[in-house]
Image (cartoon, rainbow, N blue to C red; front, side):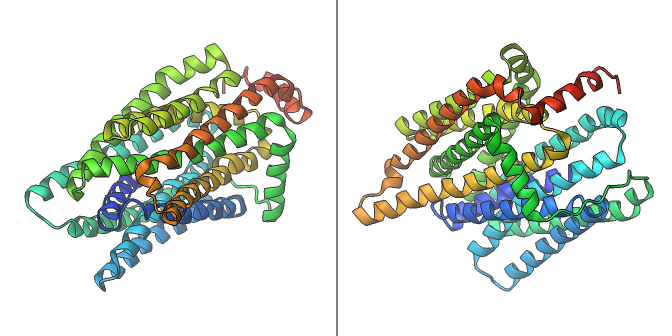
Length: 426
């Protein structure tokens, strides 16, 4: 967990900085679209594979695939492949480090640990992930400052990132093959179900229960808004720090502050808010903050406006809204929870990224057709404002249908079973 988190942050920060420096901000939306389609594909494959094979073996295949991907990327660079291709591939790889590895890792960890052990060790394992992210961010910042002072070309840092990532995943593979294979893992009940059935059952559950239908709509709208705000933030921040190394140092400082802020909100505020106001009221917070962030970025089209707006969006989204969503998904019956979670946290997020990028592209094309640069005018942020208003409408409907949805028999059976199990000190 530590190694993957460290390597992922190296890839993400260096890929974004390199892409913005060599290719440009406007072109990143095409990479986001591909990333959204990859997320849909990976989520679908995960639902098919993860319950059918040994999780340790799946982990080994994922780690080997990542190792050889970084080696292949280095080979592309060694034959003078185009910069936009290698930087785009590195960004897409960083997203798979975040998505694919962690999805399987937590299921594998649960297989190795019992319920009592999970309560004891899962938070500790998670803390190693946070430490890896923090050290990865700090490493990029310190290395950028050193290389800038020594006037070392930034291509060297990109090559170093690829070598370090390949080395880290090689070590992880050796640990999986020769260390973790010695531990007893709970046997997995292999269930073979076609992809179409997995997808339809998850969709039918969400469609037929008002609470989850409005939740899926709100998540989709929030991700669309987030994508547009991310684009605006990249524009304003890269304009303020156009140098490759300066931008990496800025990204490192920004991500460290954001991680601390999200951690404080998640640990000390989210639980209080959820307990005091209840889940049905908590979901209204994120759309309101998304609307405020969109408004600030729209009316203050500067670096400061972008920085304030992105902090408002991200800190609440990952500090309060995401934990609340995970808590709400806990009321779904266990035999359907994976499908419902995949649909909301996988398909909706991937689709939101695609739609957000398409909205930005539409404004680009429209501006080209009328001879007016809509991107520079910030008019495209109207898409974020409209998306946040849709999210506000969806969460209001969620609140109104919350109590009646909990009476649905598909959830009521799960709640009755929990009334006894929740009292057990496992």
